[in-house]
Image (cartoon, chains in turn brown, purple, blue, cyan):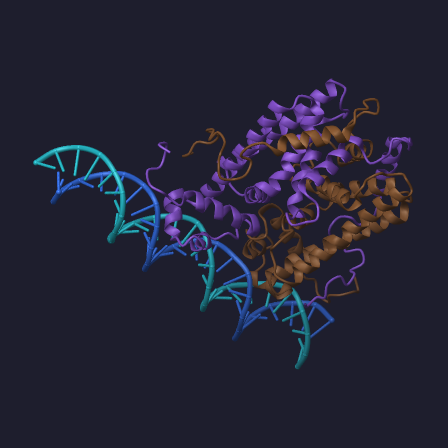
Length: 235
Length: 235
DNA sequence: TCTTGCTGACCGTACGAGCGGTCAGTTAAG
DNA sequence: CTTAACTGACCGCTCGTACGGTCAGCAAGA
């Protein structure tokens, strides 16, 4: 590598371990001392390389987004029709949980309100930019009458949700492969859960169901409905 | 109220403010001192009432789950068919972001790995129990041939994802009402994004798209593909 | 009625641990 | 000699928690 550093440095290793710690402890509970200890380094070394803790997370974010955008470019270059592109984005997002675990977790956990000013803006912009990619795919699909949705923006958020929330439950050692999961998710999203035969008027059913729950009592905080002994007061 | 406390206490207020702080700062960045100050109380008072910080979050969790289960019971009691019930659960989950904001955010942010032993187990069990409710709805729908999915468990997680991830983007003052959003999400999930007319073989398209991305280069951490100047090194 | 004793909400201070960050100095490669 | 990775002692600060103490309300005995 003729590019950058004349002498080998622990930069990359620090970034890697830091991302892992943030991924499974959270940013606030990640200690630079712990990261340094795991690498047999001094805390001062980390500061020497990155300046401060926040800069570390910033680099993790930048690298993560960089990878996601490259991925999106690949999808755009290799797949033409909107349906395929949408499926590919779903798969890419899910696969990141397996292939880019630490950074994905770190970035998904620490989405909001951790920094003032600069990084918040940066992260928000990158997220908007990424969202726009999927929105454009959906819009193109609607124009070509290959997809149907009244609100591509909202639908994109729906797709992101089902994929990104996987950080909550996905485990690489689980029974299903990422390809299985992506296939199922994509199928559900594209074909829907209601079989073609059953032709009830969905919109009426939806409106009625929402209206029913809208009147349910005591869903906000303040009153625990049953005060059920779900957990002993003194464990 | 002849029931519990003979003298007025700040318990509920403490719980309320604490949940709000956790909701928009995170658990680790929530300081008992700040909470106390906001209520013009002493830090010692909080400890007097709850014992320690973790117990506070535990109470927030218990109350939150209690409300969600009561809600699910309501849905079960007032709606018969699986499709309506599924829609209702989607709406309930989304509405909680508006009507039970602080607790929802607090519980969704601090899902994992924050406590050892007792609370982790408790939270995990409640989540499994809640998931099972939606899985049962899906299974019933499949049996009655009103719904179609090869994997109700996975599909339930998909539904949870799209709803719960709303904590990332939903703002009460936004242009769309929760009812609008729930209606759109439910419609997309039930009817699918591909219009009835377009009858390409979805499964082939899905498999092909996934296979294409599977071979994309450098999606894991380690190499930033372009090193694009996304953010200046010194902001 | 006065008094005594108890309960529980609440205060204020103090402490110890752990954190991010600083800095003068050491080491070794080019 | 210059440069940069790296060390290790150190500082200041914040936070959770412990603890002794105050005071209002209430119940019962005299």
